[in-house]
Length: 389
Image (tube, rainbow, N blue to C red; front, side):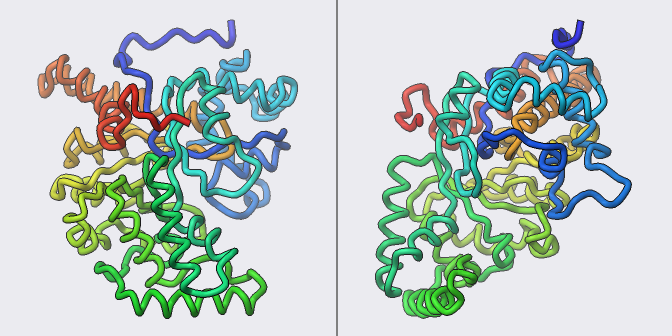
């Protein structure tokens, strides 16, 4: 009977997953084109005569999600989308999130759109949630009400300080706004003030068209402001949508910044990485304050996700790798991200146990580290952390 799949006996027992980097899902009903737009990092529709369902991610959605809505695996996309509309977005979200196996969500709230809040996301999944504050959005909100550079910089300092009281960490998308080849040292206060004046003037002249912060001096100021709070700082690295230049998103470009920021006590988490995830694993291996994940890469590589995870685990210490989905928009992406992680990890470590390279006890212990325990340690997510939303 559709919808009642039995767990694979080869799958490792894992605690509820901690998704340390994710986003809200859309509240509204989606037509076929809107749904497919979330299956790609492209900012354009699929090429004529093609579909984004014909991708590793599209196949993974069709494999794992239909049974949760009472359909057969690999049912045609049109049948799946029709079933989705029959049930309604709210019920679909509830079913899929509840079945994901994720118990805790660290939600980057910096994306626009009618998305569920961290509290709503957690309620649908029957779990808990914490906020990750996106630095660039914080700066842009502050600039919206600032009359002068002094107003802006004072407001930004207050905003970072206030966010640090309740958030689990910060995130930067400097990779999108400039690239990771930033000068590593903190910018001089006079340079920050000049850059702020210049940016605010551009915003005023363009009637908001220059609203995004892209100045490398201001981006460095944001990174260092977050680092001085002592909270974990997530950094987007590797692939994403066409808004970035992938050749400037290699995490190895952060090496000097990583060295410079170490005395602050800030933990850096390198997100995604692909196709540079091996470099991220190296950085996690040689710097004690650097951690890494391959979150979004697993979702998009689908049936090849285990190979990507294996490459990360070649060099990165097992206590330095975290799980995430980077799910955005579709609750399906939580299901797929979690399932591909579980399957890939189980296949890898079971194989190593069978070869005699690992003991079964170590396999279970390391799997729990990647699934939840590393994130709990890095973000301070004790059972009474006081930061639940």
